[in-house]
Image (cartoon, rainbow, N blue to C red; front, side):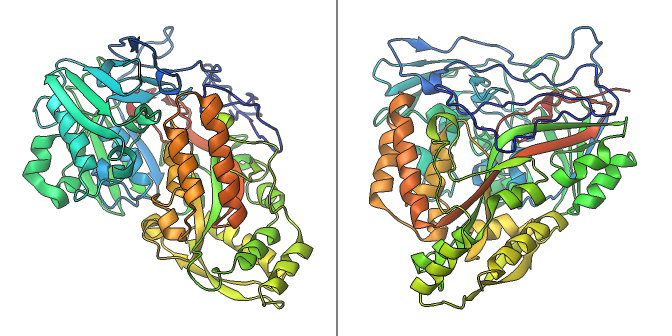
Length: 555
């Protein structure tokens, strides 16, 4: 069964108090109808992360947040779910995530104090509840009791405090250091089940950041045993699965954590990942029953599955933002006119229609909902203006540059389409293929001057927008772009709980940055998962990272 939620040029209304709305409609397309299709989420209401705190603002305790299976069906346990994708993991240490595939294992092996649900609301996890102070500068977490790490040691407030202190340690190298260190004044653990964070100033993104794959609670005992290099090969968390075997760039197997704190979870005995970079090979394996699940298929492949009664296709509008990242400190891109010429040369609608087969919409911002201006347009496709900018730059006949392209069959097609568009105005993009297993780590290290960058929404916009807009962000260090006024807007927005006030700040900051073209925004796409009909329990989370804890296999 295929559920069709193509968005084409559909506009999305402003959703105040939400970070993203997943919209769509279900349509059976000539294949076996799933009797329990994944329901479309209801529009969420405000959560603590987006609401200005009041005295004793409190999250209601939820002992075991869960998505229950259909009550009319008997719960089936056991089985190994097989899945194929690129396995680019360099480490299984969640605090040092570089490659996006490491986030998948992060959710398998670890938990955090809070999580997100299908509506991107913040919900309890290792913290059963939390309280805000009236001034928004103190948050107290009340932790679950009786939780154990995979090594048998106790999860408690000291473990949470230890993780936070490691993240904030400049020498530790945590991915989220700049998302916590400037804002957290001190961390207190008055007893084994309570953690209190004292903030320098009100800081709205805190809960959202703590729900990220990059913020997981790891075993201090295991980390001290294995050290900074060894822990990544011996991951130890409280997660629903634990590592059995990992062969980098080949395979990874996790097995059920029989002592998992959330009663009844997980349902599977194991999840087995196989490294398969070629999208065509992945699809062939699903069609022949050699694998059970593909997290992301190419839009052009959907038609190949329409009449297959043994396969279910699950698309969702994700607002996944695609762009080209440009190193503004490297020739020829030091010239703003050169960057503008590139932007004017790209026909976003054609990219959506051809490369995404219509499963997307052109994008001019990285915002969603309350931090997006759906009417904003900049550098729309215009070959005459592109040529004008080339003349302004002193390169009327064009120029050449190296275009770093992820070496898989799907991404190469995007690179070739882009190359052909640029060639129309004399810009010669020389494609340099980079193995998928190395691509994202190399992008983060700034090894490329022109490369693809894509981002899924996060529970709070500060994570994405700070990373791409702020001068201390991870990708602004790659682009070399810095704007003090943009920095000020991002910082002020993060300290504002009222999204009606912080939203316009984020929008203004985006407009200022994208006008200078350190990135060329392209489109937002729908993400499409495909799976065997025997796979149950799949659900889309807006950040698009699969949570295998709820998966089941029909026997």
